Image 1 (cartoon, rainbow, N blue to C red):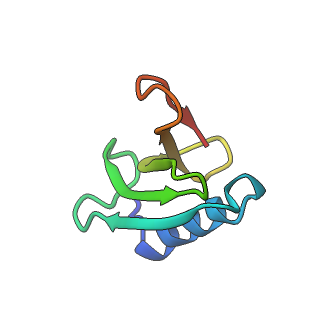
Image 2: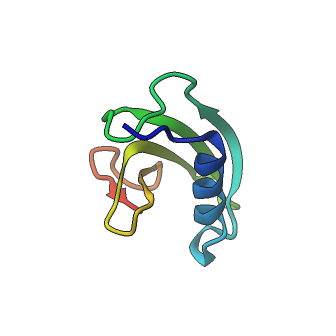
Image 3: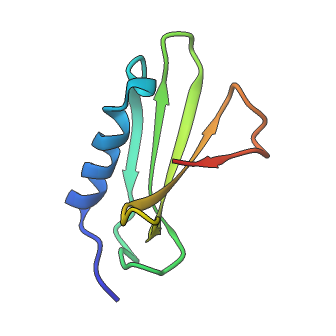
Amino acid sequence: MKKITKKEINERIRNIMLRKSHENEKIIYKEIMNDDLYEESLHVIAVFKTIDNLGFITVYNIYSWRNHLGQLTTLMYSTSINFDSRFSI
């Protein structure tokens, strides 16, 4: 299994935050797990939370597998939606 670097995780976070749809969000919490940073391990390897200008908090979980574009899979949960519904970005 290929090791995932913290640099790659930080680049994924930066790429998400540079999107037009996230321009009013600021990161308020970020944690990168130190263990199990290997591809295909089926674990959450990083979590970060943002707050937008309306006060909605969004939680992003980054997983150790890749999407069809070769990027680390990220699921997003928002306080403005039902927590049972989530979507991949």
